[in-house]
Amino acid sequence: MVGYPSYKDTFSAIRGLIEGGADIIELGFPFSDPLADGPVIQHASTISLEKGTKMKQFLNLIEKIRSESQIPLVLMTYTNILYNKGYEKFFKLAKSAGLDGIITPDMTVEESKEYIRAAKKHHLDTIFLVSPNTSKQRLHEIVRQTTGFLYLVAVYGTTGVQNKIQSYTISALKNTKKIAKKRVPVGIGFGISTPKDVKSYVKHGADAAIVGSSIIKIIEKTPSPRIQSAVAKFTKQLKSATK
Image (tube, rainbow, N blue to C red):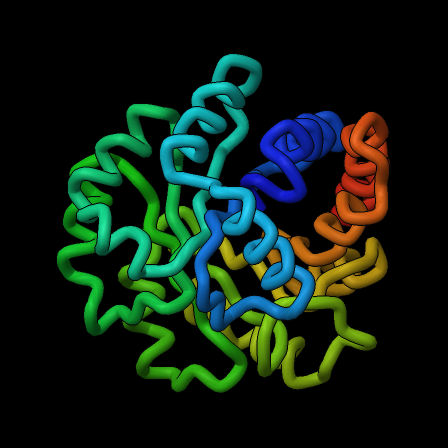
């Protein structure tokens, strides 16, 4: 979450993710009504907003990352933020800064025509979400529209740490992989918090494991000077579980 608990700490965490071997970094931009997020990310979003995080800071952060690394960067935020800025205007600025893609969990394929058109014009990936109860017909349509990768939501509900992997999630992963085939990779997120989780999902065919809340919790409990090393250590453990 950009700006949580401070701009400086965000950048330290990003350096830790890069050092730990992350393949893609998802940068959350705070929103007042983050409907897809659980309490950990909601709290981080609230703190970021209270500290006055602005889109200009987000774009500056991307540029700063780009001065050190070419790791793929994806924005995760909500449609109202982008719509308010104007898709065309924002995507132009974001691409110029170095962004690679966008995740908007409340964007539906039925309402995405203008959004997709503007993103394509500026060569940004539009990453759509599907869930375990997405119908087969709708899943086919979302697979046709998503670029970069397809984001499979692992659980019914919001982001956060889960106690165990559900059998319906494994079933959904296998079905989603069949439909996505080789057109687009499938990343799975929501509730993934341990190397054991990552290993299990990769074993069942996931192309990527997406971890958010656990990393924010590490940032939350770690003194600022040690955030980079703590995040790097945890990321290395997650990455090792993919092999």
